[in-house]
Image (cartoon, rainbow, N blue to C red; front, side, top):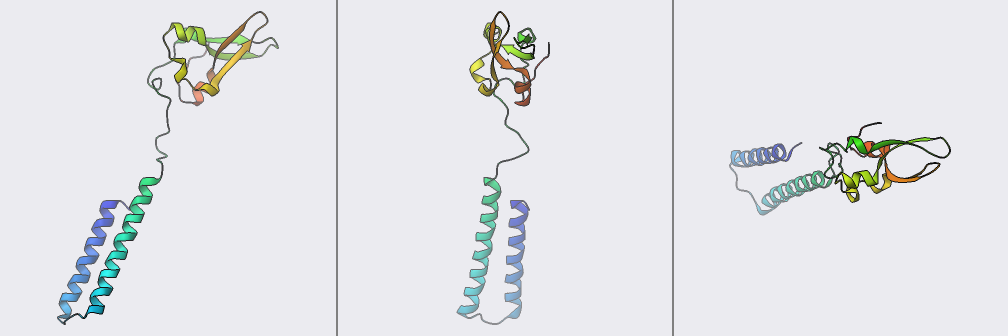
Length: 141
């Protein structure tokens, strides 16, 4: 129930209670008035608690995205497939190329950082599958 609907429900209940008390046309004693005020106060407290609880929960509709890259694709020319010394293929974005293309590598997810050892060279970069799982738009070469 949204807070507007909840407030409207509370207001209509309060008007009903007020209408019933006026229709009886008898004088209310202090006990009756105290009961009505206590009930109204309890409704307000419960309503605020429900509203507060809804605001505290994180929204699951919008997953967090990495900054500055969600609308921008990483440069295609930096995407490489490396063949490791044990013949395994690794798709990654090479760090030196990303620097040349003015990509701030400190903003990329550090858990995607890899060091790839080929037979004759070692390369540092960011693993393509990992970047894709983190919400980055990637290309495959």
